[in-house]
Length: 154
Image 1: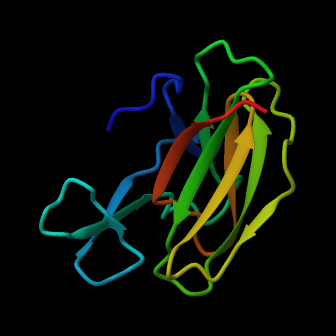
Image 2: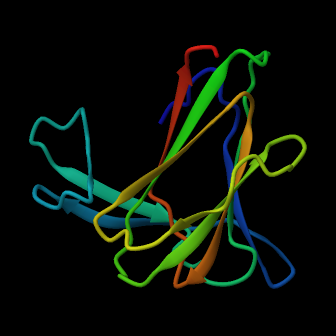
């Protein structure tokens, strides 16, 4: 999948056992009826599909996703990063910590994600790149999709 021109190389990892690990990609399946699966705009048969990363991240510091912005943004340009999450386990719960990509300073209150078996979205708007940490509370901290938007200037 192609990234927008203003988004750099998105990286993902989790810390466990003293070092970083690359989370595995998991394909959950496809369905024509499960609304928690994402619809493909290019599939004429209207199949939905869902995968995830972070299924194995159930302890430690959580799953980290770094999203650098590569264009010379000024404080007037705003970007939106949205994350889609859908769990198979009803009691999975995690928090999202959003940080400035460069300074690692917190840029939003912690967001608690729970009861997301039918799928849920979380978004943040910011003027530069972000680091997102998905820290497990109960079960795994898995995500299924990340979306990028350049929205109008402030």
